[in-house]
Image 1 (cartoon, rainbow, N blue to C red):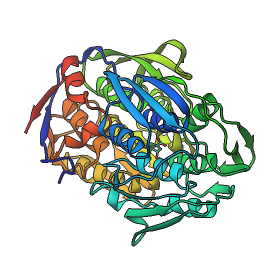
Image 2: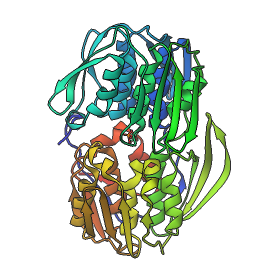
Image 3: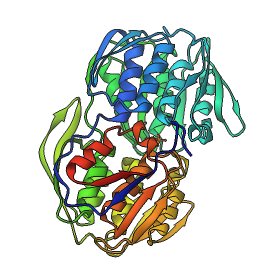
Image 4: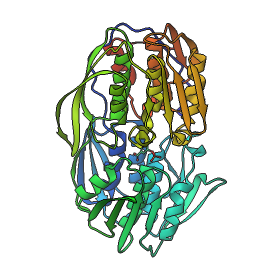
Length: 448
Ligand code: S3P
């Protein structure tokens, strides 16, 4: 099954020690936001280090369809000539966001308070994902949504001609929902207030402030109360996109489980709303040294020196940590399979509505590799087999999900027998250089 042309099966074999420097690409969340806020500013925003993954390229195309001029000057170097808050023009065709939940949900937000109509679609994975979590709050601004049953794409949004500001308590921990409401609030008069009970990634808040919006974040017993003043003139910025910690997770975890490895992963975000995986790995006994802490592109970063860790221990991951590592549970479950003892991941039901049902995809694939798994709606439990103890010798179904594909390929680098994935093509959505980067470190990856 592939939404990106033909399925591309790939196989990983037991790897030689991984050595060298892993320069992972730019952050996906920040890349989407840089293009979108650039399009809503007046004048030219320059972006360096933009992730050129398919998800972000689809957002660039969408911003052009709404009237912004988006240009690539060199690899990673882009400019956006924005049209200002409220300045979008109505797109004359359907907006196809491909595989990207972040893309479609943020773009729905930023057009929902302008008097225009736009129709959105995506690939087979995105067309299964719930949009009601975004269209519910957008309807409070006065927008209307017409989609398929269950709030699925394709979906038409009729933007509010006279939007009103909104006070909204986000019912699920979701930075996409929070961000969609804040982006909609930009073109509503008065103050839009978003309350999140559990802190999720805060790139929208940081970047909105950087572009000159008036925004405050108050930490209260209710949670984070974010207040945005509508109808600002956003000022174009120079945005330096830091490297993606969710992509860094793959070489980091590979080095931890492939015997003899010793790698450096420079410039990895240590933003507390994103670094839950690294905290968890250290608790499991991972040998990770956080070198040279500094600030880059408005984000705290460090260089990660990672060495093979042969005596990792299973742990119970605190459920309240889930929002800061939500995309990292698939690769954590591969590390857990290479630890001794049991790793318990509770409070993770959001994984069921990602690019695939990630609890099910990891459970079925790891079981096929010989690992004992327990699961319920909100929980994934992995019974570890110790360093290098995973039998492997199976093919995992990736269900159009880049992180499932990369997780099982890393699994195969440490397993006794090779691990294949039925389709590695979705990896281009977030980590287009994955194969070359892992191969240069010493991994054995084969097509087929
Ligand atoms: C993202 C938020 C998260 C995450 C996704 C990127 C973002 O989704 O899983 O990969 O950039 O806002 P949710 O907001 O649905 O948790």
